[in-house]
Image (cartoon, rainbow, N blue to C red; front, side, top):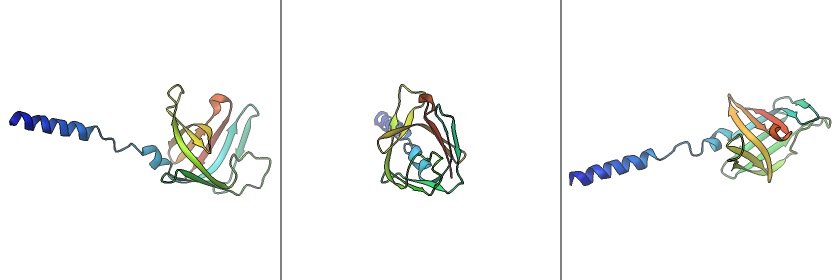
Length: 135
C-alpha cells in the first residue's frame, strides 16, 4: 500500500509541476492600450515619431482583436494602421530568429518583444518596419 501511495504522490507532483502558469504570458503582457511612438525602417530610411496618444492600439486577448485609434493627420508619416478593429494572433516561427510573430488582420507584422513597457514589432529582417509602442 505504501508503494502505491508513494507512486500516487509522485505522479501528482509531476502533473502539478508540469503545469505552466505562464501559458498566456504573451497574452497578458500585450493586453491593454499601447501608444505608437515611432515607425522606422525599410530601404527608404523611414523614421517617423508620433506624439504619445496620437495613435493608440488596444489589444483585447479575449476577443483577439486590436482596436486602433489613429488621429494622425500628417500624410507624410507612415502610421501603418487606420482607425479600426482588426483581428490579431501570435504565430510560431520555428525557422525564424524569434519564436513568435504577431499577425494583424491576416498580415504578419514580424517578431515582437515586450520589455520595460515598450512593445517593439520588428520586420527589419525582411527590410520592413520597426514599430515601437509604449504604455
